[in-house]
Image: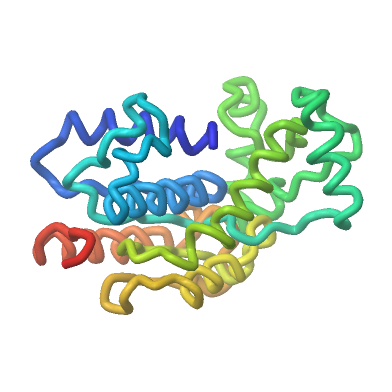
Length: 243
């Protein structure tokens, strides 16, 4: 939960800075997964008042979620992953990762490569240029450390098995049909298994788009789709669990 907790700490800070407006959390790819899991945690806290039971300890992250929390917006959420055979996954996750979490095995795969992220050649050339590499702002094509990979597997499992089956929070999701990094099957799983009302969710399937939705030729349409959904929810009043 360490990555989710980092997102939550930032989200709570942002909510404190903007107390008088509806508040949405969001993310892309693995960040989208963390947003979904965080939304599930906040929903559970509101439903069961788990803050009184001490389930989340006594730190700030155990206090009630921001009252203006209104839903989440995600692009290409990592919910279903392309993993190695289970014996290999088990050994890496439960044997090697606890012992050497910072090790990057030479055989460690990484589906997040340039050819799978950007369909536009000009964008791909820009994103993979020496200048961008020198800035070190992207992990594109870099194999994961074992600790990071293990945390991601756990987060994906938690989203599918714990968060999504009981999820009622409003959301908006966009995903490319040709995403080879994060299968669109994950977004379809979210839509099929969540409990969020149909009127409280929106899904945009970008035909032919790759992983980076906002770098596609349809980026402006995707942004408009998200903004329209957010503005509609703001005009209709902030969502509250149980409304």
